[in-house]
Image (cartoon, rainbow, N blue to C red; front, side, top):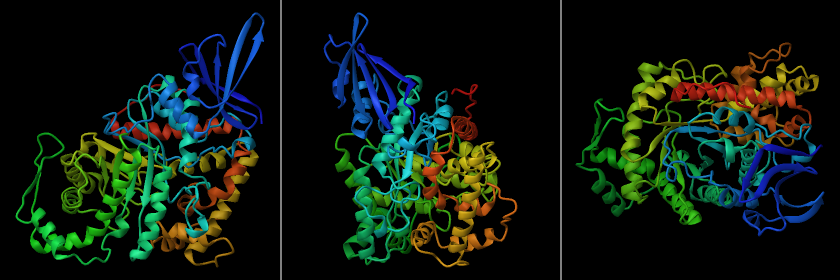
Amino acid sequence: MSDVIFERSRLTVEGETFHTARLGGQDVILAVFDPEAEPRRRRFLRGEEATWTLGARRVGVRICPADLDNLLAFDRHVALQRRLVALNREAGLWSGLGTGNRVVVTADDVADLADATTLGVFEGIFRAMVDSPVPNWFIQQSIVRELIPEGVDPADFPGIGHTGGYGPRELLRSGLFAFASLGGYTRLPHPIGADADHAIVAGRDEESLDRSLALNRTAIAESRHFTKFTVDTCHLFDFPVSLSAAERRRLLDTFKGRVFAIPNVLEGREGFTYTFDEEEILRLGRKYWRACQVHKELYDFVARLKGEEPFDYELSLDETPTPTPPRELLFYLVMLEEVMGIPRGGVTSVAPSFGFRKRTDYEGDPRRDLWPHVNECASIAAAFRQVLCVHSGSGAGVETGKGPGVDQALSDATGGHIQLKVSGIYQEILWRVLADSPLPEARRLFEEAWERTRRVAAVVAGEMPAGEGDAWIVEAVRGYGPQQAHLARALLAQADPARKRPDDDFFRHFAYLVWRPLRRRIYATLTRPVWDQYAEAVAAYTRMRLGGLFGWKDRPSST
C-alpha cells in the first residue's frame, strides 16, 4: 500500500502545521514545526520527533499515532475550535441528521486497502454535510448490536458485531480520523456529534436483565467520549414487577387528579390535554416501571462517566410491535422525571414508534395517519425540553427516503424541529455500487454476497439447517423481532438466482449479515473510482433527505 498525506487535513496553528496521513499501513498525525521555536500545540500529541536540514533550513517533524487519545487531544487542544460536542445541550442545536456508519475503515484494515485514500462511508456523508447548515451526528452505530465492546467475548452474546468486529473506541477513532482527513477542522462550518446508539437492554427475568445491563454498562463505559447516548429499554415494557404500597402511592400522587396541558409545537394550533384515572395509572405504571428504572440507572451511569462534560441522552421507544400512543409517551416522560428522578433537561430527545419498519416504506397515508401522530408526540417532547427523533429512517430504496411524502410530513408536523437517524441504507448503497461497477472483481463480490445472503435468509426462514458458526446469525436476526423468519420466507420466494439484483428484497433485508465476513476483501478490492462512485451516491442520498426534512437545497457537489 502506498503512503498518502491527506492534503485537506492541513491545519496551521501557532506556527505548527498538522496533517493526517497513512504511512507504512498506519494512520498517523504529522506535525511540521520550526525546531528553534518553543513547542506549541504539538505538545498535546504523543509521538516521536526528528529534525532535518533542507538546504539552509532546519525542519522538525513529529509523527504521532492516530489513536483515539491523540485524535481527542487534537480535537480538544490542537484545533482552533473543538468540533466534537454534545449538539443539543452544548451547542444548542436541536434538529439534525444521524448518519449511521457501517462501512468503516478501522486501524486493522489500513494495511490491506487497495486504495490508501479511502475513508469508507464518511467521505460521502461529509460531501453532503460540508455545505449544509444542518447539524450531523457524523459518527453513529449501535454499541451493543453492531459493535463488539472491548473485553466482551462475542461467543457470550451471539448476534453482536455484525458490522465488522470492532468496538466503540475504534468507531470513534476512525470517524475522527476521517473527519480530520476530509478537512473537518477547516471546511465544516459547525460541530459534529458522536452517538453511542442503541444501548439495548433486554431480559425476561432479573437474571437475564442483569446480564444485559452488564453488557450495556461495558459498552457505555467504552463509549465515554461519545457525545450522545441512545438507550432502548422498550424490551422491558410489561416486565413483571410487583409494586409496593409506597411505589403505588408515588404513582397516584404524581398522576391522579392532574390535568396535563401540552401546547402544540406548531404556533397557532390547538394543544392537547391528558388525564389519567387510577386504573390506568397503575396499569401503565406496572407496564413501564422496570424500563424507567433502568433508564434512571443508565442515565446516572453516563452522568458519572461524563462528569462535568455535557452530554445528550435519548430515549428509544421505537422497537415495539405497535406505534406509541401519545398519551403513553406523556406518561412515560412524566414518570421518568417525577417518579424516577431524571432531571428536567437531562433527556434531550425521544424516539417513539410511528410504525416504521426497517428497510420498508411507511405503509400508511403520510398526511392522514402520520402527520397527526408525529405532531402530537413532537408537542409532548417539546413540553419536556426534548426534540422528537425518528428511527428506522431508511425505506425501500434510495430514491424517496421512507416513501413519497413522508419526509415532508415529518417536517411539517414538527415545524422542522426533528432529528432523523439512517444507517443501513449506506451499506445498501455500496452493494448497488458493487453490482453496477465496471470493475469485474467488484461485481463478483456482489454476486458472492447475494448467494451468501440467500443461504443466510434460508437459515433464518428455517428452510435450511444452521451450520457450524451460524448461531450468531440466528441471534442477530432475533434481536430485530420474531417476525424476521416469516419475512425471510416471504422474500426468498421472490428471489431469482438468474437475475441477481441489489434491490432484491430478501437481499436488502438480510445482506447486513454477510457484510462482516466480506468487508476485508471488499476493502482489498475497491479502487479509487469505485470509492468515488460510492461517495457520490451516499452524498446524493443524504442531500435528498436533508432537502425533504429541512428544506435545504444543496449547492453543486463539494468533493
